Image 1: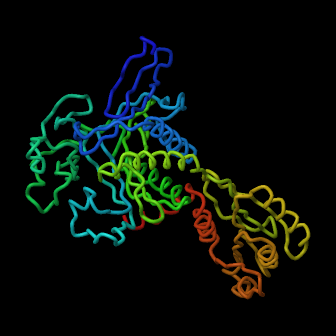
Image 2: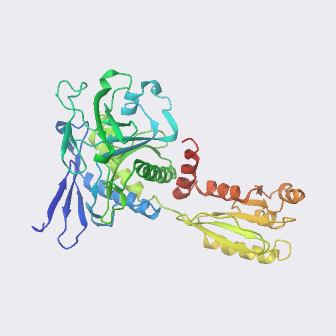
Length: 443
């Protein structure tokens, strides 16, 4: 290794190096270590883990970047290394949960949500967002790296006399967090330490909890939508954030098979939880290789929402700008030029083999929508755009002959949302966009 390369930081499973010829950039090198329970004695070496961890992180960060999520990732440079912008890390572990499975710390804090073995775990309709303060050996440090406190010894770790690490942060308002035990219910007095920390001692001036939460939610939803394409369930994840060279908030560090609980279609574990559960090391290695291989298949398809009008005078609804979805505008009359319509339809089908949705935005008699619906397997949504002033116009959208499966939505805005819901079954960015809005209703 070049003797001029300087170690910036060294963790349990990776090392960061500063590059003399690339200011503001670090080299991230993965190791073969696999850890659990913050116990150095439990650490093991797993052959090819560095390769699988790097493959997974690079694939996930590339997907997120394509989806418009700001990430600390530039490029992969070797089987076990990648380049990232140098970040000022925020001393928080951010956890998002879709499910509360057995043996999770959340169930330890909320035993009332525990389900029996073999039952489906509790599912959160709105993702559960939690913050934990990153500590090492119980030392509480502020954002300047200064030690400002020490956690007490863990009542659950009496034999090791180990201090509590990574305490749960509970918002007490007025910019204050209360520190709680991460594995003891709030109604148990042992969970309370009578310790607090100012948010300003942890968060940079330019960053708020709301900014972190929004970005964490969208990150999880993109990955949840992507994994669902392969029949997998993202149970939860733990990620970290940092400030990039220009002060921008970035999803940083790594996201690999240590970062989440991931299960297949049969609810079988694929991630590091296997190591926590003392599974055979060869089985664990096989799952890490499988996950790394699967991440290479996580993509954003190229699809279309076709806004098809019979006249240029018809108003268009707004289609959000989302990765992988192109808004196509076509003006052809189903009544006056059906041949041209079918030719245009064939061009669209040839251009977007990964699919799309057609919105037939028609006033008066809708001959366009039924004509298109009879000639394509793409969903066709008829929108009676004049029904507000002429209610009778809706009937030509409703009474369809056999083998003309057009559906009708009166609101153009809802028609776009319905189209996005359809595309979300295959497009993780559309899924993120719609699911984020849906879950926000429960805020």
